[in-house]
Length: 86
Image (cartoon, rainbow, N blue to C red; front, side, top):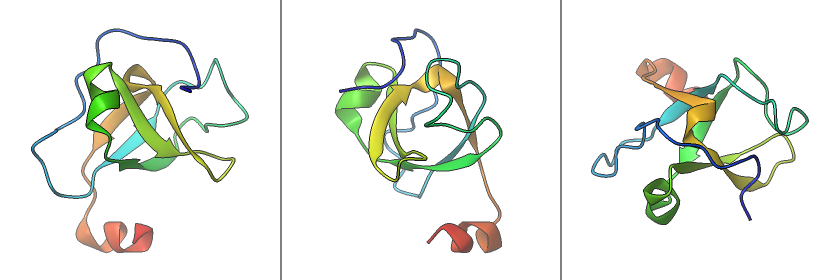
């Protein structure tokens, strides 16, 4: 079950990109205990969720959940920083 509310807009999921993807949280108003604004999250690939403008991340509970894509902005990290997330 997705956390947060449904949202329109944000086209951040790159379905054809096989590289690891990262986002930064810009909105946690519906679930402040589960997402931290300004925190970097690694995307867990989920094409079905992306079709509905959601992305899957491991949140502060330690579990993976779906959130509206509009809660995040896609970012590219230097390889040295990506290695920290591996």
